[in-house]
Length: 445
Image (cartoon, rainbow, N blue to C red):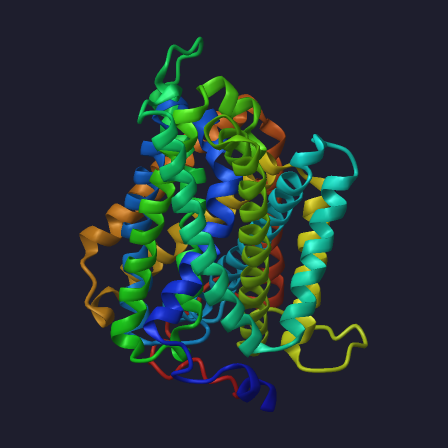
């Protein structure tokens, strides 16, 4: 089992490192890809959608924090699911949904990278977008193969550049507009409550990177205290950054302008606010942020898949490849993400990610509530609130998508059914909660 020793080192991530990792993953995806998508559903209230997303995510984080405090693990979400449901198809399927939602996030960010990089050349569609998206995914793969330490250091530097740069963008855009909010100006369209709640589903995607911290539980120093602290700090930092950006974009552009430029709204907002130089700097910042987001995401997913393979929750085939399992899972991750980046546009990739993530999240809350509440000292009311908020957001999002893009709802449903059916065949039982003792995920029978 030496491959595990190479990649997991207990106590190798400080509290600051964990916060940088969490915010790094969140800010890469969230803000560049999703600001315009959220505005399309929420209208002028879109900055508030990010606050709503943070509230739902904070309730969600409770389940993960309570479980991680009790059993800090490099298995993270897979470990939580197995502790709740035992090694059956429910745990395996939900863990696979999480892994897939992470791969989807990766292709979302890769496509966003391509969209922003091509902005100065006025290229909006065509074959260059998927081609560049695939190129950045392959780059992330190569850096990841170089090893763990390079990823950690790179993430820290990138997180600092991203947070500083994006905050400066928001402040500068607000300042130059005289703190007026253009997006609130008259708009021909009315945006209802359902649209706002549905937009929260996409805003939640901007925060779901906090799960990266739970997935590295065993490596964080003093995990019983620091996992929870790192998660709450990361969410807090992201709320501030996202609000600055949302108000910055909204102060430069009307809602119609944000929606028509939804795939590159930050670059579009930078132009009137900060001139051509600001526009170019924003494009560079977006490229740096999204490239590093893809990098962190590739690392996190390959870890998650390697863990699922170790826990015998998914089958594994080497396809004739040499080396440790995590290298194989890196290859699978990159192939799936690249395929998605080629096949789907940004809006559809984001929607697919939202469906997968919310369903997985609800399965976790229910599992903790049903099987582990007493063990981890969790308040049932908080768990049920988290479950209800997810359900409301998912319902509103499904209603909106059935109206605007029914095919993506079908793709998501077929994908989820396939995942659970596959796991049911592979693991031959739905749940095995009698495997309850804390030491139950020893692998060897």
